[in-house]
Length: 126
View 1 (cartoon, one colour):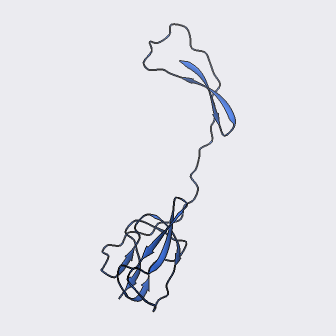
View 2 (cartoon, helix red, strand yellow):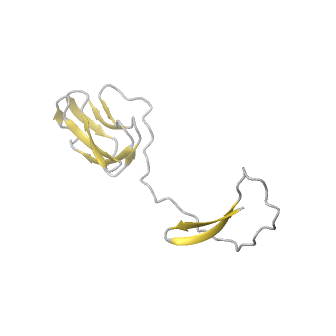
């Protein structure tokens, strides 16, 4: 057993650690007081929309998992192939999404602020 000091969020704790590779000492172990460490909970995250079962030729899909920041076109807009249609934020960086083909925006499936997985259909273009 080895006595160590561990600091968690600025608070120091003394703990005993059993070293498995070393032979067991013959001396009696040193009694220690139990340490209560509060459970750490993860921050609430934005719910992630499920992946689309099948994306069509005119579907605009998310290239990565993240949060949809904006949809840059409106339903009914006629757009050119390669036009910027949406923005996704992942790891504090914005990724712009472009139309895979020219056409008319017929449907918006995700709203800004929603979490998306890679491959989630965001818009449909006819």
